[in-house]
Length: 319
Figure 1: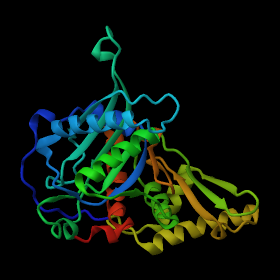
Figure 2: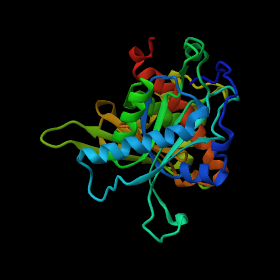
Figure 3: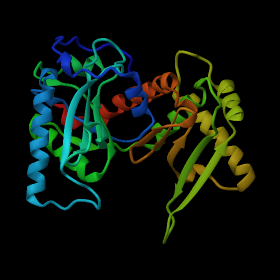
């Protein structure tokens, strides 16, 4: 996870489109997000967000005219809003995050305030890696992480528009068991300043004809005590420490149930910071859902995810 600086970009933000509402950010942090990896956007400009809102709205309307197959209860007659999402930069030089919201258009005579947001997505770059950002030509913008909350229909349409408009590639964000192990270890020691939750690990056993899931919950005080005994350097987490942490947990489980968890696949981790699934789903957990603390916790999650998003499809990053 890199905390290094990124190349400084021009201060060309469309000030009329900025969204710096702390309550807005806090509300976003409480949602569950599907993660996607994004290659650099070509010829993207933060000054044209209003134009992008109109263009995406036209694109969605065109898809509706094509009569594409949609999910039940999905109405494509929506209002599109593309804005800046402030408050998520890991450092001043990170490219500004972009928020896309699709709202159902009110019926005739219904106040605009009663619009309902039916789909939300945002692109961000937190603690951008200078080795990546310095490599990119000026016409490219690095927003490697795409977070989505909403139906697959809108996700496919919005993703298609971005890929066609900015010549980028949006791909699934699969999280490895190794990365989940790191989250289980690091976030166990995270101080959430509230009532901690148990560290829960979910394992998948590939047996026929149906797979078997094993849930392993560790009391937060026990998990933290174990991690504190293993973790020595407050400024760094090592691979050996993570492996030893998991090895101790596996040994304890085997002592009671005679099952070798090392022969299974770790597919989900839930801690006091966040819940993360191997298929790219992440959600801030209840212990850290206060506006301030939730933002700090999720910023750490997003920081990690941005780093991983660049690695997931490295072949697409060569220009």
